[in-house]
Length: 300
Image (cartoon, rainbow, N blue to C red):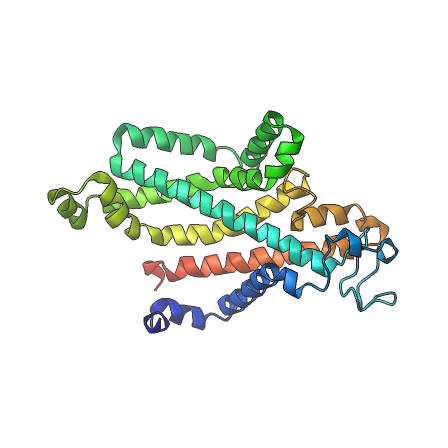
């Protein structure tokens, strides 16, 4: 641990005030969503506690505000602040899960393509090239549409969260695959790989034990940046009504619900979830930008 605090990475982190502020904001977002059941003022999805008479209450600093609901309530009397904390929990869970899935798939494909080369490389990379010609959100919509058509609605609603994770993850893996392939092409001809071949190690042990640890640097950067994109993709799908089910609303769902009341004067129902989404994605993006620069030896 002491070695980390003496490293160039930690020095670069402490020298950037924007990065430190982004880390604090990202930590607050993650902690607030993870501890929502403990920190949220209300449980917005407990139907027994909802009061329709409390619907459309404005934020506390307005003339008609109520201190019980700091950011106001929505059309069903749910506390907006609590709904944001619970919604961010779903958004982050989908974002992290989809990024992990895309990372694992992309790294595996990139390793195989870069190390084996030949026909394997050509086939895998052409698949990646074809997928890269389509916007990620369209691929996610296509996957979700196929699953909806193939499964009964009741079954789809039960696995909707996993479908969204798979749809977003399967649309992002080519970025990781192409990056890992390029790094693997460089690493496979180095002396330590040739030495491993000489002593009789097989292809799989060489790829996992020797090549993989040396190609993970760029993967970490792409994963951080991709997390923000995955959160945005999930919010977009939920806003379009094809994301997570209404019983597990994310920030995108809250924005869609509030959008119906935006021009009738209840602006807080959609504005505050939108601000929360922007702040969360921006903080993660800034951290990803810093990590990219910190791990780039040309910029040191």
